[in-house]
Image (tube, rainbow, N blue to C red):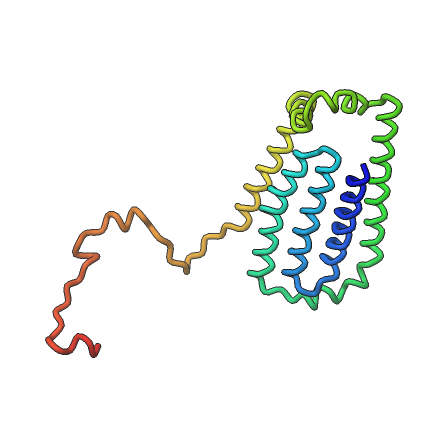
Length: 206
């Protein structure tokens, strides 16, 4: 228990420090790297509470896909970050209010979980069978039985969002030459190969 407590404080401290550096770092590339560090430490916290499935999902999806995508976007786009930071003080009260609301929601969620575990409420069944089955199997049983319809609707919404993003960003421009595989394959030898007779001794000078 003492070793787990030490690991918890180490992971939690690194997560908070990395999250603070995501906001405080001047270089946006460094901010993304600190974000990856925060994800890894959060995965360690999930492992400490026995949620190995959530830890792997956090590493595979967020670190392997989302954070890398952020890094590519930041490095490829020419963004004036000094201009973006100029409105930090103006939007600070709104951001602080949103942070307080999120903190209150987290406190209420933890309090409801504690009450359900002690008093045998709605979520008590998850703790009764917590030692009998694994975390991954418990999530699968809940997602594909009780919340199957909601799970499918969420997947459909993501699919529609992906198709909408592709439709909005895909623009056909007339002034751009595009490759036509069928036209290339249909060309004859005379259209693709030109035999040029170069006089002796003049080929290297042209």
